[in-house]
Length: 71
Length: 305
Image 1: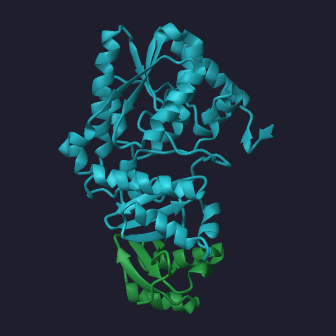
Image 2 (image 1 turned 45 degrees about the vertical axis):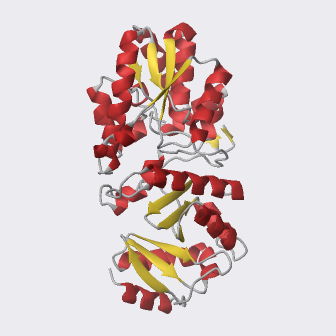
Image 3 (image 1 turned 120 degrees about the horizontal axis):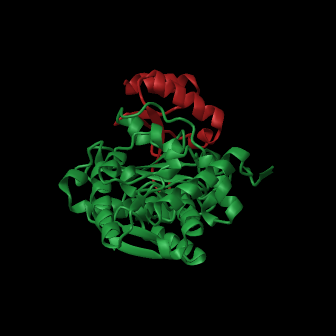
């Protein structure tokens, strides 16, 4: 599992995100969370996560006042 | 004919039900492990019809690994159908082998449960102890079945090849309200193997799922507990709605209130046995029958649902 490589691959999809491995899950943080409401985008992200050795992917939501956290 | 997405029972399913009635009558009387879920509710109702109330005892094994709503739902099914019911508490959380959360955790839970129910049946002269394990369950990772076998528990739905789809259709035809109920294994199943099962963690999971239901989350729902991080599995049809910018703050707030520092939404959505896949115990879960429009809170599992 490579967090950096997955983040770069996600950038190729147009999704700016940081990736943290948490167990076998890729935990994503992105300022563009709403783009993941699109099922096609989610499928593409999941496929990339699997291709990079993760068993799944999840979007981290920062807090109630701000939908995402920017690292 | 299809109604609300569930087919009317096929001729084959009706034939299996007739075989189930014969099987139950051969037993004379039965003690049913009863959670009020789809499978055990159907089994108990058929047993009641086949044997009469004097020859059926449905037993609810209450545990900290189930939310209180579970038992309320089970009681309601029993009340509605006039099912004789008994409740007892089980204490699998006091067993360190269970609390350590190994991949065969369910074995210790079921050992505790059936170890209490089998003597109860014998004391009352009931020859058969049965559960709601169905034919679809046989291919899953279910170490609890070993405990059932060790205690002589029979699973007529599985033995007669009755599938979940058939149980839902037959339940619907009988007017059993659980026909459309989502599957819901115990709260411990939301904790990855190796992370200890504790009352605090179970409480956090239960509170988070309750809060999400209160927000309006529909259908299948699991809050997976990864220490300080919650991973919410929503029904796939629900994901887009809850990833909308306006909805995210309420989602986070609900789960944080339950005690989690970090909140995530799984991008694939709900799938049965996802933690088994993460642990390498199972391959990717196969497609499961789920009701087309699950509407009620989850409420079944340990007693063969």
